[in-house]
Length: 596
Image 1 (cartoon, rainbow, N blue to C red):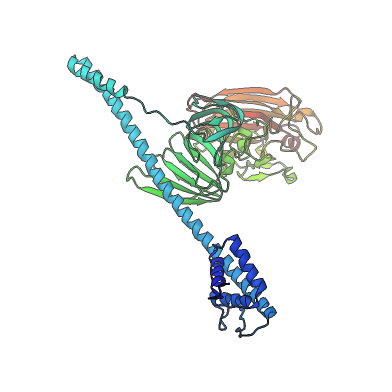
Image 2: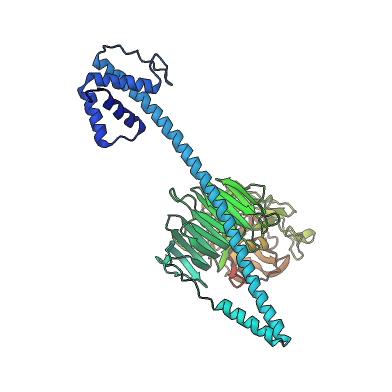
């Protein structure tokens, strides 16, 4: 130590240690001083006590109160005291570090939000300037046409010169493009009008892409992943930003990639480290669904130019209309509306090709996200999971049309019995005028998949093939029951795909545990559109060949109804009611991407 001031160097090293700026060599020197010199050790203890506010009998946060130090003190006692002081100091340091980390996190979050708001304003200004530029060009072309038509040659020449000068300006030489993402996975994908490569493993630059069939996954340089379901139109903008023009996608943003931005025509989402889904509808409405974490949503209301913002957390959803109005209501997120991971094998429903109505029955989006064996009670519209042996009893059903509130794409259910006249088959009041007179009883629910997978008596077999599976789905409808799908709501979920037709195979299950005469088991099958019969087959019997169905659809068709009736009263009404297992195998809406 310094001979003029023995404690000067020690004090300097202690202060550097407390400030966190001590070097490795200086720290080694401090350790040597404390190990070799008991006086230095005692001085260090006193220094730390003063620094911690403990000298003179002050009580620390955990109740520890050290003894005052005398001029002479046992070095071992001093060491014990020092250890306790160091423990207190470490607790204070940890607390201070946690508070500092929280402060830094809040500051970073605030900065990210401010940057997002500024970026959103810039994005809106760029869109406005682009629209103004396009309007200016259209006006110039229009003016040229009118002037030329009037024969004003001089004015025409001036306009020609101006336009020639405008379009012959020397273009800016763009910088070398930067890689922003990689196309990491696809399934049954078909691209159209893409300015970027579409092979798996391709490096992607800023540019527009359009997926019209299947699925794709894109991984950004910062680690964010995007899972796309056709049809979807989007633009890669930077390594931290994407613009979704229309369609739907899921974003997964890992730790370290917080701040990832997703723009739509009327909103911006800034991620805070989470997983979320976004839908942009045909009419320009934007939906945000948060599966995990938090996302901040910005929107600019066109009527006043103000920017509105709101944070959405796990399980919440937000809505921005085409005019930029952010809904004050917070909705419930619907994860099953999104493909969150590309399937390992292709489900029956294929984006851009066909939609699986049995998956809709299971609460899915028509492309494999629904629950197998989910069912709807046709008498009250309640949703259940699994097979219920207590349902093994035919009971009289309601004569009312029952709306199904918990499934977006299913309008309602009913018990078909036309003995008293036409029955209602949609929420718009469409009626089934030619519904036959039945016994008015029902037995089991309407099922997605194999309704009887837990019962060895029955199987979903048609023409020897097993249905009710992931790749060969089925809707099981025991007589007497019917279900109606809302075609307009389904259209709105498809991002511009047209509904071309409904297709299926229908018939009684091949495999039944038969009691008595086989003629007891027969059923009629019906397909209606807006209450009008588009397909029917009557008198279907056990192990008869299944009927192939195709019903063409147009944009004016609103509701699709499937129903099974008991085929007329039999000598044994109980057996008639219990064993009319009707199947609609591979029930699909055929899609066309022409409008997208």
